Amino acid sequence: IKTYSIYRIQGKESKNNKKTIIIPSKNEEGNLEHLITRIPKKEKYEIIIPCAISEDNTVDVAEKISKSENYFQVQTFIQSGKGKANAVWEAIEKSNGDVIAILDADMSVDPETIEDFFEIIDNNNADFVNGTRLIYPMEKGSMRYINHLGNRIFQFFVGGIVKYPLTDSLCGTKVFRKELYKNLVWWQGKLRFKDPFGDFDLIFSAAFTGQKIIEFPIHYRARIYGVTQISRFKDGYKLIRYLINSFFVFRTTSKM
Image (cartoon, rainbow, N blue to C red; front, side, top):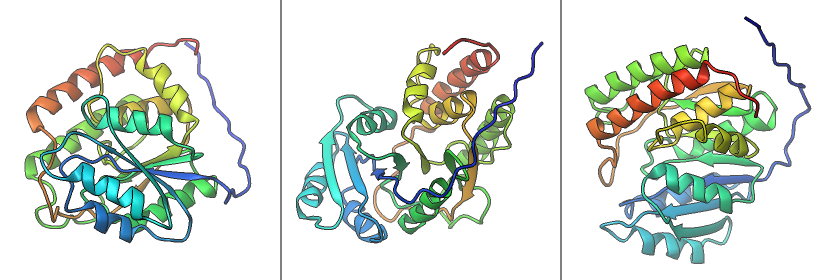
């Protein structure tokens, strides 16, 4: 049995990081324009809106934003596959930023807080910032009881596997250095099952490759427009299979 220690250089602040915000969107017509107006205009972020085929005018609204927005650089595209994870991975491949943020289109997380996530990376205090919804009281109607319970159970097992006391592994708001993506692709190649949302892929690949992870608490809001895109039982089953697979992979060593 061998024990390894991983050291990292504590560098100086880096305010020159190019930043990309990815906003996966499906049936979010009523949220997108308002969300964009609430993103702080202190830096000229690159914003990418990958769209799934929707039942409303999400695609048209996203294209309108990409043409009319004159402060941020906005691009949009229709994802080639299905699911949030597919949308995020395709957007990362199109991105030009050094730091990537994932921000849900439903505005359940205040867009203004994205600055705080980026600041942690800029100050070199972490390589990966995971949002957590389970610290502050939630807004009424923002999360069903069974979802809340499921999140608590998942974070318990995820924290045990990665040996980090995570409080919310499924929060959609995550910010990380783009260089993590190559580690993520390597990690995905070790698994038999896919993560439908991408949250576990990101956390496990960051933890497995020694990235410094910090959690940042956010206030979780109720949706104003639309309904959740998550199927509690179907997607929950997929996540359970993924966790079991990850447990065994995480306990083995392999040359990257």
